[in-house]
Image 1 (cartoon, rainbow, N blue to C red):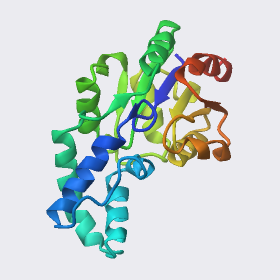
Image 2 (tube, one colour):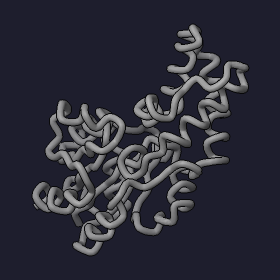
Image 3 (tube, rainbow, N blue to C red):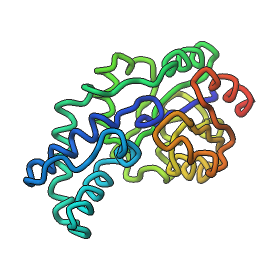
Image 4 (tube, helix red, strand yellow):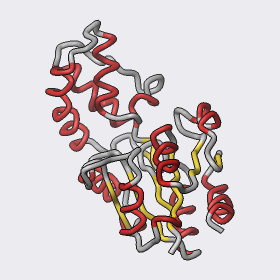
Amino acid sequence: MRTVIFDLDGTLADTSGDLIAAANHCFREMGAGDMLDPLTDAGTALRGGRAMLTLGMERLGRDGETATIDSYYPVLLEAYGNAIDTHTRLYPGAMEAVEELSSSGYGVGICTNKPQALAELLLTRLGVRQSFASMVGADTLTVRKPDPEPLFEAARRAGGDPARCLLVGDSDTDRRTARAAGVPCVLVTFGPSGANMAALEPEALIGSYAELPQAVGRLLA
């Protein structure tokens, strides 16, 4: 079976608002107030918790305090898990594209660098977990993206041949993962980092999910 594997944050859903809220919770606990802005820092948010903490610490003039970042990372994850779907929204047309691909005989799964339990919780809260045949998170295996093995495992768990999968993503990490796996990559241009996606030279760029089924059909023919 051919499979289409999706990244989650910034690809299927804009999770930046809830991620930034969790990071700002940490900075308030430090007595610093909100250090990140939901609009201008959305791109950093989609690179993960440590990236947000690092940026905030730099703005506090506390560059290099890795021990502080390490100690607050679990705090951030707990705060995020407690309010994981307050601001998060699926991108327009995402689930329609997923359903069309499934109806056309493709296996559909997720490969994310979000911890698996949080990814499972988010998709359940959004009411779409049942639409994906597999879920591989940052801690499902001993390696994470851009290592290709999580992508291969997501394809296998969706019932597919890893050599016949495609990755839909929104970042350099996704591009490098697909390249390491030797499979096509489709990058979305509607996320916070969309303007930079063309420079990564993926096999396809899409400006909306309405374009995805045709791109998949071409690349996995």
